[in-house]
Image (cartoon, rainbow, N blue to C red; front, side):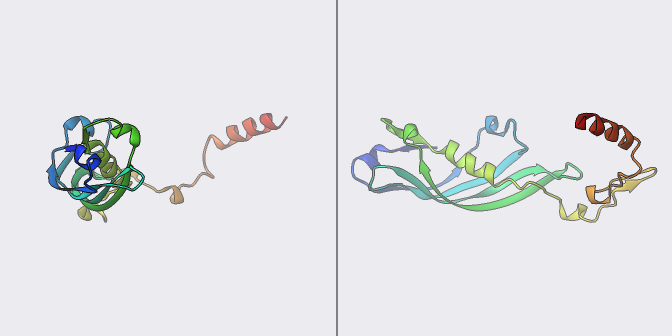
Length: 158
């Protein structure tokens, strides 16, 4: 989304923004996000007294990310309050400003570390001859490599 910042430099103190955003698929590369939907930003770009600029408002939408257990699509809705200073190098001597990059960084911050769909919360994680255990349940006392680890540690001490 391209914003004409000449208005800010010519005396206006802020520019109102109320728009739906189209996020290019190149932004999804190298992220765990599979798709974004209904991304909306309502806010403004403000010129501060010291001639710096801030973008403030509410960024909301839906990101589709994989469930941590089944890797199925999980719809994650978010709404985030933004109050971020725009880097002076980004706007130095420019007539326009593309705010997509700034808003994209804020979307990335919203990605949860772990997502489990409600239907998978009580999923039985075991089968015939196998089961998934947590690190808390891991028993290392019967590990065949524990003797080797002791030998290596003794060698390092000498």
